[in-house]
Length: 476
Image 1 (cartoon, rainbow, N blue to C red):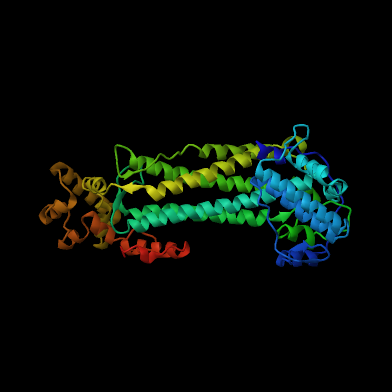
Image 2: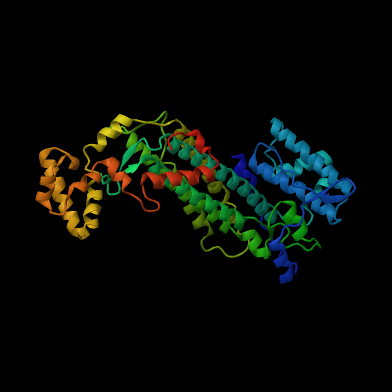
């Protein structure tokens, strides 16, 4: 609740004054990042941004924003270095109290941002009131929210990589030892696939998820702060760089009303959640009593994805039809679905990582399931195609071959050559090189297929990509 209140209570105020920047200046700002500015007692010198270590990520954004802003005001000569130092000392004390659980969240103060500002005034007096110079509540909250989302994106990317590492490690542990059934058509047993090939399919999905979050972060990382002020502050070398942004936003109206980055963020979260729900259902299915192919050490939930999809829809409806500038009655409601969705997806990623690190597979149960599925039928069809038989005709031949197996209660590799020739004269002795799931797997050879060599190459790629020691696994 505290995290929600930090950014939820917004006041409607908007300044329409724009600072003129020529195209050359903008081009320069978008191409490079000047040194981050940090003001010392008597001078200003480049120094990396000092992050707040507050226990709450949202209070961290507020305090980090205020620290950097105090530096900017002193750098621009709008406050003295002495006042800047007082502000920083006060913010340090507030941070300490929050971390120690000693901060008093007074109910007579409007929201968390206001509580921090007014507590700063209680601590240091008049210098605290200078912190709001050339900074509206709207652009401050917009900046705080971008900072919070940027940190959340970094955390999600780390969690995605952790799950990828867990899945690739699981694949490496089982490399070349287990063939499972592929179910591409409503749980119909169609063809054999290597277990590691199935696991890597989800690693690929997670990689696309990470790409979407990375793209979202790049578009998010522009600074709204100071977009409509009437003070002579250089937003390129102060606001943006002091907080680690790529550049300032160009338009003051867009700066406070833009929520595209949130819609993109929640969209990426929703797609990731759907991918995780598919992985979860895969595990639930194969761990069920009917299949019994794997043994989990704990349960995994697949129904929480609806929460983040609901959050995306909620925010889309909030933004639909809004006029430009900050709309107080609607945009102050943008925080709750974002906070909830981030919490949900982080929890899902952690849960799935733990599951992947502890799951075991029932080799005997898997092997038994392979003997009654006629999984080599598709490979036999490809065999006939190589003999010059049209695929549709080969499909009919294989269908009659499987029907014979069903009647006899055997597998394709149990049929004699005479029995096969009785169905089609195109069968010859070499057909037995295609029969059986082990032989079937060996025949897959195209890039990206489930063939042993192909999957081994895929594992090589992901082990290198995720910095996993391939030599620690001796299956190759």
